[in-house]
Image (spheres, rainbow, N blue to C red):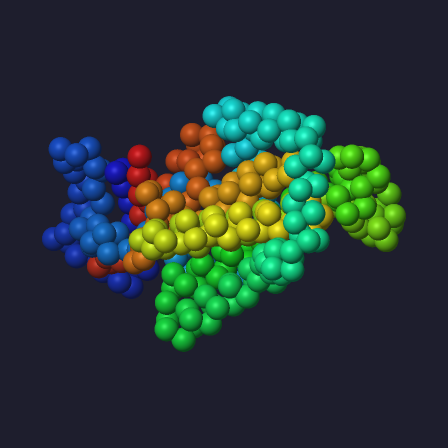
Length: 329
C-alpha cells in the first residue's frame, strides 16, 4: 500500500516544536510512511472495500433502490456484452427459436388439463398470482418489517435489493414487450402467436394481451427475487430448491392459463438470474453479515480503478494539519 502525506503549516501564532523533525522512511514492504500520528489515524479510519460498479452496501440508503437503477442497467449491459457470456446468450437464442416451432404443441395439452380439472385450474391460478410482482413486493415488505423491528441490516438490505431488482429487471422486460409485440396464447391469431415489432403504443395499451407475451415478466420477477434472497442468505440452503419449485409452478401456471408460451421463458430466466446476481452480493466473494459488500467489477480502465482505490485521511499533528492519501494496489 502506498501512502503519501503532506502537512500544511499552522498559523504563525502556533509555534512548532523545534525538537521535532518530520521524516520519511521506506520499510521492507515498500510503504512510504507519513508521520506516526497520521499513520495511526489512517489505520483507525474506516475504508470501504472498493472495485468498480454500484456499491452493494450492508445497510443501503432508503432511495438506493431508485438511484441505483441507471447503473444497474449499465452494469447489466456490460455484463451481458462480455465475451464469456456469449455462449449463454447463444443458448437462450437457440432454445427460444426451437421452442417457438413447437409452442402450439406444447401449450395445448396444458390448456386442456387446466380446463378439465378444477384442482389444476386452482393451482395454476395461485402460482400465476405468485409471479405478478405484488407477491414479491410483499416479500420485500416482510423483510423490511423484520429488519426494522429486529435491527437486522441484512434483512433491510434484502428488502431493498428485492425492490430494486423488480424495478430494474421489470423495466427491461417491459421494453422488450413493447418492442416485440407478441400475442399471448389466449388471443393468438396464428398457431404460435403473431409478432408485431414496434407496435403502436396506443393500440398496445388498449389490447395488452395481443402484444405482451415475450418475455415473461412473471418468471423474470420471481426468479430475480429468489436469486436476491438466496444470495443474501447463503447459509439457508433450502431457499434455492424451494424457490425453483415455485418458479416451475409459476411457469406451468402461465402456460396452462394461456398467458405465455414456453418460448417466452429462456430469456426470462436469463434476465431474472442475471439481474438477481448483479444486484445481490456474491456469497463466495463479497458478502458478509458484519462487513460491507464489495462493489461489482464490470470492467474499467486502470486509472479509474486506481482512483477508486484511493482513500483520503485527515492528519492532525502538533503545529500543523493536512491530508494523507493512500492507494491500495
